[in-house]
Length: 611
Image (cartoon, rainbow, N blue to C red):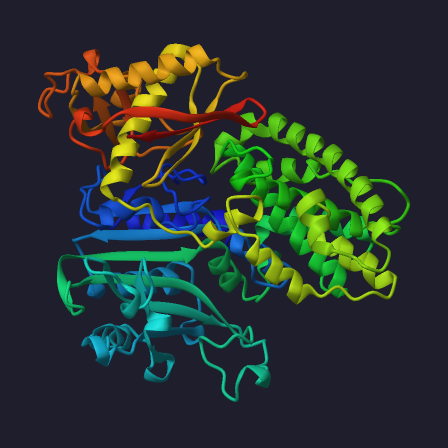
C-alpha cells in the first residue's frame, strides 16, 4: 500500500516530468497578508503570480503546501475533518489549460496511484445565465474522452463549481478574476447513503459516501466595470488536492485518521485508553482531536508561533489546551489526579515528518519545552476556573469561564451535565460570534483564509515594513529577525525576535532612520536570481522558510541603482519577497511608530503608520 510520502513524491515527480518547477512549501504563517492568520491553501502564496506577476520558477509550478484552517477546529472529531493538512498543487500561469490539466490529473490518480476508475466522479460548472457565463461543456467532453462515463459527470451552479477570491459571480467586484472549476470525488462504496441528507446520493451529498480529493480551477474570466464578464488575456490553471484525502482514497477507507501518518500515535493512544479505536464513540472522538490538534501544533510552533492570547498564538494555545483536555479523558481512571503530557506525541510527529520537513528537527527541544510550559499554565487555569465554576452554583456562565479564565467549554459542559444542568451551546456560540474583534476569539474573522490586498496604501506600508526591519537591525543588532507581519491599509505590524523592551531613544532612532531613507528617495528594485546568490548577498528571509532554486528579491537603494545595475553592495536593505512595492521610497510619506510591546517570550511587536 502506498504511504503518504509515496503519494507526495509521486505527485511532484509526475509534474516535474511535465516541465513543472517544484517549489518548497511556503511558511505556514503568511507574510504580509492581513486577511488570514495562516496559509490555508497552495494557491494563497501564489496570488500575485496568478494575477500576472512573473514567477522566478517559470509558468509551470507544483508543490506540497503546508496548510491550516482554524475554522474547522470545532468540526474535528468526525472521520474527515482536520485543521492541518498538506495541499498538493500544480499551476499553469498562462501556459497549458483544460485539455492538458484534466487528462494529467486523471492519469496521476488512475495510473500512478491506481485508484479504480469506477470510484471516481467529477463535477463541472453548470453556467450562469444572469452573467452570460456558459456551461462548462468543454471540461465535460474532455472527461468523457479520457474515460469518465457520462453518469459520473455532474453539473452544479456557481455555489459549488465556480472560484474567485470573492466567491460567486454576483459577489465579485470589477477587475476581479475567476472561473469555473472541475472537482474530483472518490466514492466509498462501503458507506451506505443516509436518507436524512436527501433521497438520492451524489458527489456533493454530506452523508459521507463521497469525498472530494481534487479541484482544478480554470481562471479565464474577469469582471468588467459594467458587471459583465470578459476573457482574461492569460488563462491560468490552479489545482489543489489534499494529500491526506488522496491517501484515504488509496486506502479505501472514509476515516482520515486511519492513514499511515496517524498510525503510531493512534496505537499509543489506544493503549492509554485501554480501548480500541472505532469501538467507543467518545474514545474515538478524543483520539481524533488529540491527533489532529497536536500535529497542527507541532508545525505551527516550528513556524515560530508561541502560545499567547492573540491571533496565531491564541489558536496555538487553544489547540494545545484542547489536546490536554482530551488526552486526559483517555485515561482509564480520569479522576485519579495524574496528568498525561503531550511531549511524546510532538516527538513522534517530528520523527514521521523529518524526512520531508527537516526544519522540524532542530526545533524539537524548544517545542517540547513550550508544551511543558503550556501544560503547567493549563493546570493553573483548570484550578482557577474550577473555583469560579463552583461559585456560580447552578447559574453556569460558560462564556465567561472561557473568555476570562480560558476554562475549556467542553469541560464546563461535562461538569454541568454531572450536576444535571444544561448549558445552552447555541447561545454560547452566538456570544462567541459577537465577541469577534482582534481579541482572543476576534481572530476568528480571519480563520477562513483570504488574500492580501494590493491597495496603494497597503503597498506603501509593505515597503515601509522593509525599511523598518533593516532599521531595527541597525539599532538593536543584526540578530533581530522577523517572526511575523500583518499589513492593512491603515497600519503595518511586525513581530521580531528581541529579548527586551525597546527604550524611547531606540524607537526614536528607528523612526529617524526610516524617515531618512524615505527622504533620500531611494529606488526599490525587484530582481530574480539563484537562491545561492541571494543567500550570499545576505538577503533577509522568512524564518523556517524553504525557497526554490530561483527566487525574487527586493532591494532598497542606493540612489543611482537601476534594475539593470541594482548595486547590491551599496543597498540599504535586501529581502526575499514576492512584492508588490512602490518604485521609490519618496512615495511613502512620514513614518511613525504607534506602539511597541511584547507578544510572546522573546518576541516583540511594533505597530506603525505612514502619515
